[in-house]
Image 1 (cartoon, rainbow, N blue to C red):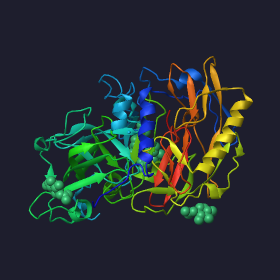
Image 2: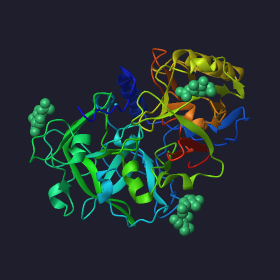
Image 3: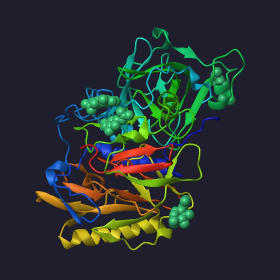
Image 4: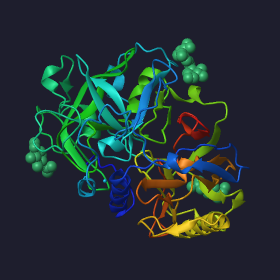
Length: 474
Ligand SMILES: *[C@@H]1O[C@H](CO)[C@@H](O)[C@H](O)[C@H]1NC(C)=O
Ligand SMILES: *[C@@H]1O[C@H](CO)[C@@H](O)[C@H](O)[C@H]1NC(C)=O
Ligand SMILES: *[C@@H]1O[C@H](CO)[C@@H](O)[C@H](O)[C@H]1NC(C)=O
Ligand SMILES: *[C@@H]1O[C@H](CO)[C@@H](O)[C@H](O)[C@H]1NC(C)=O
């Protein structure tokens, strides 16, 4: 397969991802920070326990910084337009699913313009990942697509669908779009992004397989993509999926934001002059974040940058050099070597919970347990893959120890409390340390989307660095 991309890269890790997604979906939980202080010198955050639990109302106003912004919301949440269906998928359902030729793009967007969409958490749509709403085709059909920095291809489910999963919106129908075209087998981008199964004269086929055994196959195509009412990418290349299965929830498709040439960010770079982008992932489905293209310009004043480093999959992933963690203001007892896995560490919007090498995780867990014990929080049974859980019943507020990620260039990123303690079961009032260990020291470390919640995350691709700013969204 020419275009094998992995969405969840740990060997067997996809099961874990599916389990985690499942856990997340089975009982939506959220941890809202009531009184989070900023900075890495802070030792505790006092958080109301009720804010850990799901909210029924969408409290998002016009959260997007600008009219040309994309909203990011949780798919299963009250802000989600996709919410209508009878509740989130069952555990079992989730388990079954957990530049060359780019010249065709219309250059009517001035370089440096802000193009911002609303970003939402996908929980109401059966995924723990995040999605945006875009318009595809002419006239534009509104579609809700997951955005994934861990892969570089984009696709939507298309009519006719031989074997598709159930999605939120009606299927995209290429025959109803005046601007749709297929990529031919003879085209250069077919050799580059198509599957090696083309006889000339035919439409180019594509195939994407993810590490969690999710997959999509269909026709490589182009159509007009409307990101915001004012910004359109003509000739956007994507896969028109006719045969799709996996852990996608009910999203209508998936857009890759990886470093590969086919990704939305790379294609948009031709229009915006810069493959950079930034986002803020909201902490719950009742709030809205954003995804902005055109990159580095949008960095908040408080952003701290760390260098992108090279790694095994240099084609698609964004590797960072994580070297330590501080809990309650003190470094955990793990040398930087404990974080330096053979496979490196990536930042990924398409993995929910961060995965650490076992030794680093064990040190984090000990430090976290000690900090929680100081305040007498009762432990609750483990809830795999989480092994450090607390019974918060009877507490109105919880003191969450601060957790700060430290990178090689000494950049320190303080996580929001919603990225530290994760609660999903209203009945049990339990919350767990939202990290999981890899089963082998050599496996890829991942900075997942839960840990990125509420941070403004800036992918300054041109300068090979990633920035983090506190309080980018709620
Ligand atoms: C939106 O962005 C434009 C420039 O891209 C700027 O002039 C305008 O002030 C922004 N609007 C808001 C509400 O921030
Ligand atoms: C983009 O928007 C941000 C704030 O939303 C603003 O600070 C920045 O200057 C804008 N950049 C451009 C090029 O308009
Ligand atoms: C080639 O494509 C056809 C559909 O056009 C498909 O049925 C067949 O399985 C593909 N073969 C390989 C080896 O991928
Ligand atoms: C990470 O940083 C350490 C210390 O500066 C350095 O020795 C190591 O080579 C870096 N790793 C990568 C993958 O760049």
